[in-house]
Amino acid sequence: MTDPRWLDATEMAAWRAFLSASHLLERRIEEQLKAAAGLTHPQYEILVRLAEAPGRRMRMTELARGVVVSKSALTYQITQLEKAGLVERTTYPGDERGVLAVLTEAGLSCLERVAPGHLEVVRAFLIDRLSRTELRAMTTAMQKAEAVLRAPADPTTRTNPATSTNPAKPTTQVAPT
Amino acid sequence: MTDPRWLDATEMAAWRAFLSASHLLERRIEEQLKAAAGLTHPQYEILVRLAEAPGRRMRMTELARGVVVSKSALTYQITQLEKAGLVERTTYPGDERGVLAVLTEAGLSCLERVAPGHLEVVRAFLIDRLSRTELRAMTTAMQKAEAVLRAPADPTTRTNPATSTNPAKPTTQVAPT
DNA sequence: GGGTTGTCGTTCAAATCTGAACGACCATCC
DNA sequence: GGATGGTCGTTCAGATTTGAACGACAACCC
Image 1 (tube, protein in one colour):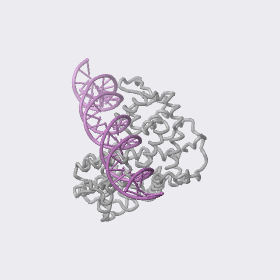
Image 2: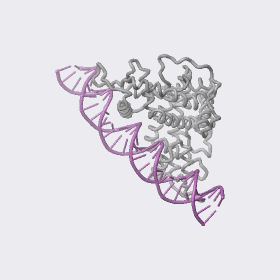
Image 3: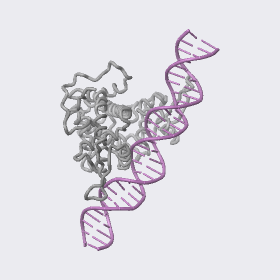
Image 4: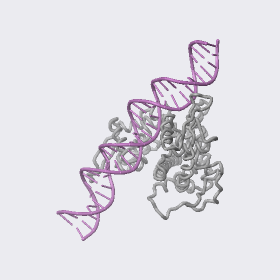
């Protein structure tokens, strides 16, 4: 195992800031949604995806992939949302195994009621803080990452070798985060 | 409550990509750390912070703030790490309430052993995917967000009004995520 | 000094997440 | 037609997280 290319100052700053910001933002969002509507963030994301889907319905597995959550977590959350009357389960016509999660009218109006407050958080702490240039840069950056992360394991897709030289491991820096 | 400024196409793309990428990356990291060392990501972050701290020790509350986790979660994780022999608890000299988490030798060498593999994931799925320009843009973007998110609630710090006009709510778009 | 208020870390109950195991169903191939 | 392997969603046990409540100590004010 060769000595890894440690992160240089810029890379380290990027990674650290990304990590902290995403965690902090997640907390804020969770807090706001809980206070405003008793929803968790995953639950909110489920409602959003369903609202956008044709027929306001989606297969469980597809929905789980979209929201980036395990199948079992989705089963759990759909059950919760069903109890709350925001979502219903239907069998998928043509495949007895399939289950469709369907957004109810109550679910849709709940989403419409909650969205503005959620949006405000997203704007206040992220979107509105960035210039148009920064916004675009972040978009392409995140989209690139998402693409690789969603891509099925492919041996030809390897680490970008175009990145510069290997900085020496700083003595004070033991590990990256 | 006035009609909110909905996200335009660029903003929406930014937010969606950020959300998906951060969730997906989190999953990958968790998976890699678990496989390589039986560590969770929060645990790894704790080790990193401790390794960097003077005396390789930190107050519980400060550590919790650093890794962005609740105090109770930190108590739990430090207990786990203590069981694994990677961390020890010490009382803080001069304040009987205080507790110091101290990285043990075993903890340090564990970190040194695990870091390269972790780094590889961070590089492969994020850092190495970005150009130098994108990297810098993301850094300032994330740092701005982090700054606001860490700032104590301050009524004068409000949403940036410099952002353009209010795009009409798209009919197909019900809510942001 | 003594009271008041605040901070520190822990404990607790409840909610949620994950991966593995499972039963049911589908698709394909002979 | 039936075996075989794959996909679907659920169930389950276990781990982890959170906020609220708590006891202990610190800091301050009169």
